[in-house]
Image (cartoon, rainbow, N blue to C red; front, side):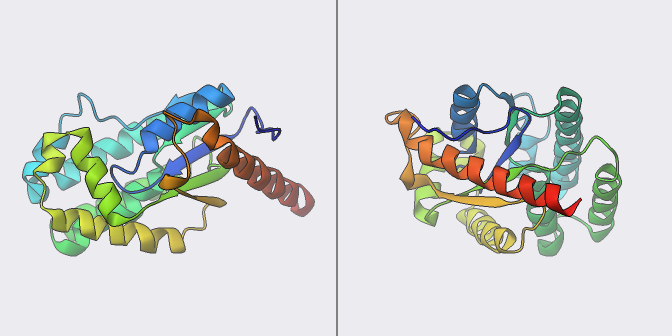
Length: 222
């Protein structure tokens, strides 16, 4: 067991490309820390399957839907005062998914501008706590492609592999330039939440150290 303590009001966000295991780690950490969870809405999403069959027609609708749902979760975390593990960050929606579709022409520049301006208005509200730490799940491309196939969502399996390659590359570039909060990088092969639940101890230790260090710096500079 780890001896490190994570503050009960912390917000931990898990980031990484599709299929990398964000939801599984979210569940495992929330159970160990007795934190609440914040998940991306996939089930009963009215646009997701349509999007995978026609990016150009549905990309804006899907991103607006995710943005609205994500903002509701941000507000919920604010009202509870923290104590959350969050599956995917709002920053990924904006800087990776929406931007990719705008650049490849499957979202119009006008729609992207509208989307970005809405996001920028949202983050200026008080209901937008930044994460105390972002866990970035690193992996080999072939590993994540196999995970996508293994979890068996037909709409993902039928998606052209070129899309997953572009997304994987964008995530690598995005995390190199991410500065909104401290980052802890974790390779997905360094733990197993199912067969070796104690293997996440080192992740908890890293999170605790980063949060303690960052909060002490904030205290000294304010």
